[in-house]
Amino acid sequence: MEENQINYAPVSVLSEEQKAVFYRKTYSHLAGALLAFIVVEYFLLQVPFIVELTVRATQGFWWLLMIGGFAFITNYAERMALSNTYEPNKQYTAMFIYIIAEAIIFVPLIYYITKFTEDGGKNVLSQAFILTAALFSGITAVAFLSKRDFSFLRGVLTISTFVALGLIIAGMIFGFDLGLWFSAGMVVIAAISILYQTSQMIHKYQENQYVAASLGLLGSFLLLFWYILSIFSRD
Image (cartoon, rainbow, N blue to C red; front, top):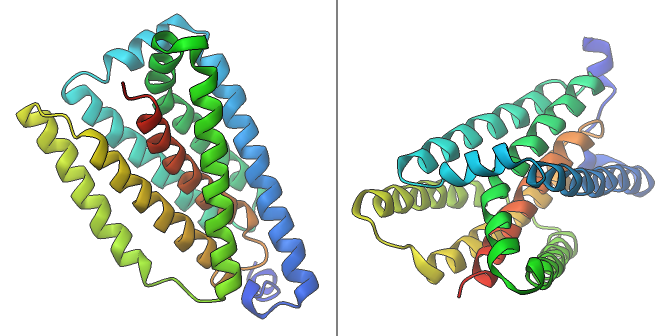
């Protein structure tokens, strides 16, 4: 195992051809993961029990517990992917777990949109996805063209996450709506997360960690999609 590990170099020191191969693998896995997410989401929405259970979970502190469970599972999946970079089956298992967790957390939001907006939410969903993809592409371009290491953003993301969680808990305790500005702020945080994850892929990951890299990008993409969708779905 140790001999195999020595053979894998950081992406930053690879030749341009090797980097291109790594990036192609990472983004093809990201595209496949997004497609899998859409398929899983569609099937979950066809199961009344799951829809009813997740919608009920958005009430009161049950939603906090659901968010906590989601955070635990996705963090576990990310660590599993990173710690098993020499075992492809475990990496793909981690990705599958992550996709399932993301699909479940999205059920109440997408159910609300499809039920209470015109044309079954098709317009809202398509516009939100297109805008998310456009922003993701633009931020990705910034990371590649600037060639800067944005690792310093980790601290910003950590602090922002705790502040956001504190606001969510406060909203539940005192019964106030976080509103449009909170969602707008979270869009900014998601954009920073995309920049950070892309920078990590360019500067920190090893050439065999394309599954883990795609998992980090998937989480940032879906975080951005969630809050853009939340903004678009507001009355």
